[in-house]
Length: 369
Image 1 (cartoon, rainbow, N blue to C red):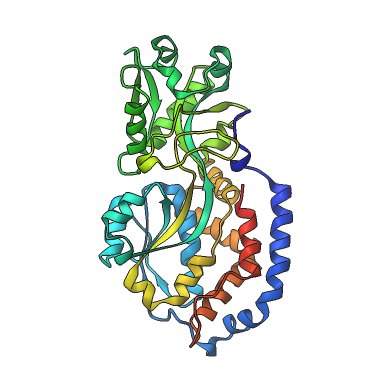
Image 2: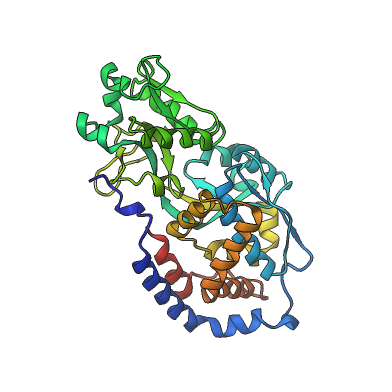
């Protein structure tokens, strides 16, 4: 069975127990912080300060970003409507002070974007908002088992590659990654490193449209080959280990020899990523409460997947996503309040960089798929 234990999409019973454990621990540390959070006279560190969040054009990132905005509001900040820009542009805009933060910076995938925008001198990268997150290549399980396909480099064989040819050019059609996302550069690198150019075509365009077509082919019983990542709803529809299987790579071809091998020895060719916050450096220095918030927020991969699937099922308007966000907060109210309490504490005179407390440690546990 393919290595998927690190990236399970559903574990409701276990997660419920973990959340209850997290809340029990949180209760031990909340009394002082919550009293301060609920007392208007105490003042709010973000009062009167506007905040501009950015996200990519991937609509499924809105839930993650909106949750951060809701937390910032509790600190007194004034979030502006979320703006959509491509990742490279987002990093530059934040570095220039044209925006405040990005909540979905993929580390290490977006390292070049971070460096090119000025790196640590102009940006702060902090927190571990969601992860670990897998990405890589998958094929339908039926074809993989029939032809014993386990590794992407097997598609150098023209006969195997033709199984995934849908446009009649004799090459396998790989549903790939949009330009500007970062993953497209790694796929292109793989195409050369694994000598796939002659037999595989990296199909790019609108990923949402391409993957919808890919799922349609699967439902018609046709072989499929595609790239995807977690958290994303695709792996809830094409379930790894059940409908599709991950393909390994013959060796890591990442820049600077970055390790892509998992604990069990599997290698999907992409570093396991964590989504983190990228913040304007000068703004971060002036707003320790917000930075502390970014440090302690955790969002389980399973919760992101569940919300994304609701969007796919038709609940995809801004009002729908806002309702999902408010529902998540209500269900996890004590945990959410603990984030606010810790952020408020960081704004107090003499407050330094506090170490993660029991609330944060407990909140981190459910984020491990």
